[in-house]
Image 1 (tube, one colour):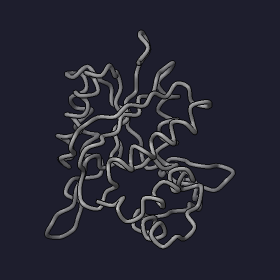
Image 2 (cartoon, rainbow, N blue to C red):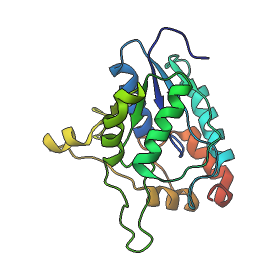
Image 3 (cartoon, helix red, strand yellow):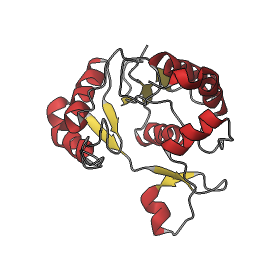
Image 4 (cartoon, rainbow, N blue to C red):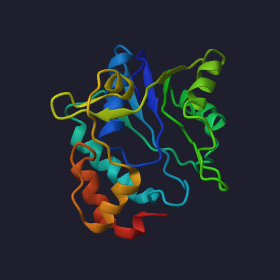
Length: 213
């Protein structure tokens, strides 16, 4: 249930939430004064290689329970929706859907709903095409786009920072690609806690290969 009279920042995602995602959510909720953060992932079909919807929901439920005391301003709900991977146009559709759920702001991250060329393997859309399109239509839709860069891990003292700031300050950052994460998951190898919540990793390990579509 969303409280009345407060701005609501909505977040759409189709994957388990890892540390970088969560830091982005915390930033967004702080940036929009006195707001509620609606974590609103899709739970329908996505694309080959993604995590199964039932397993994803299990990870969201675990994370909701783990973070509810420290982040009471977060609300969690699920959207029965099949991803189209239509980039900027799909970002607009998601803005409209979240407005209908009561959101006033919408987070658009890098390459939202993006896909790759089946011929070259290159990204089909530009990394910020969805953000630019959302901002172009936000007044017409009556929604405000909150947009963020990639969040990168700059060590235990500084935690997560925006990628451009890390580059500007010459900070050494730690990275773990999605491909490497899945390889370690399948191989039973260590996954650092700066990258993923242990509760989420445990659920994905237990699900095994059946978790991957």
